[in-house]
Image (cartoon, rainbow, N blue to C red; front, side, top):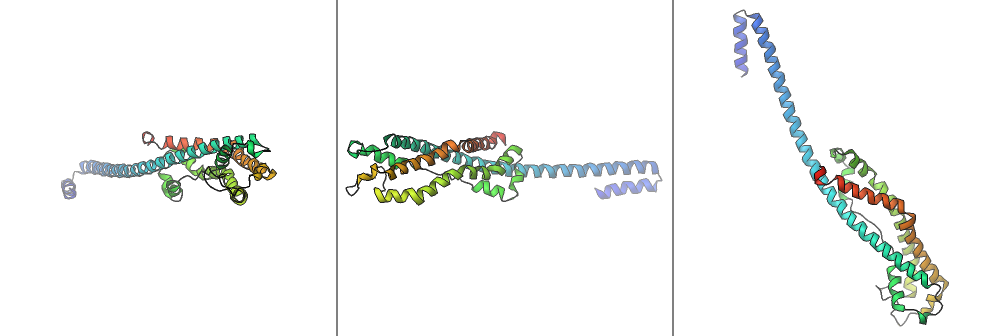
Amino acid sequence: MIKFFRKIRYNLMSENKTGKYLKYAIGEIILVMIGILLALQVNNWNTNRTQNQKENLLLTDLNKEFKINKTQLDSVLKAHYSSMKSSAYLLSRLPIKNVKKENLDSLSYHIWNHKTFTFNPSIGVTSSIMNSASINIISNIELRQLLVGWNDLLLDYQEEEISARINYQNHLKPYEKKNFLWAEKDMLKDSRIDFSFLTSLEFDNYVLDRKHDIDEILNNNSKELDAIITAIDKIIELSEPENQ
């Protein structure tokens, strides 16, 4: 093709057809420019296609991760609310003055049930995105902003849960092991237990302490809880296949 164009130019010059030569040269330049633009367009198309494929894979993984996280959070919140009910039941029995009049099976169940839990979401995909240039692949600006703020949002919410867990491990769990059998639902069913602990001021404070921790998580931490629920739902929505 290049030899063909060169031959045309040579013939025009040899025939002293300068005007036609200039027109031909301009036309040839235009054709070359069009060829370059087409090549760039094809290259851009291939690049965009590859970028879109990477984004689709990334968003698919992100969507799966946050759906799992939503399921876990729902389970944790369900356990928190159940724990709150048990704390309310125990609180309604205080102060216990006569153990013989109490339903020990109910007390045993609610003591076992009024515990706290922690939301520990999967962060594998999110961490991979944030610790690499993958965040730039995500075209949706709102989704990018949500992912950038996710870790801080999670830490704000987890603060009360972590505080409750530390309080339980350091203070309340040792108290339980000292006074009753540390087992699921049957913690008061042991002949060695001295049930007089139920009438003590220390037991009242134990119940109040657990109730306080659960209140902190669900009530005093409600803004952080609402924020994290909203963020999870929005991330799931924006990473759904139809939004890709």
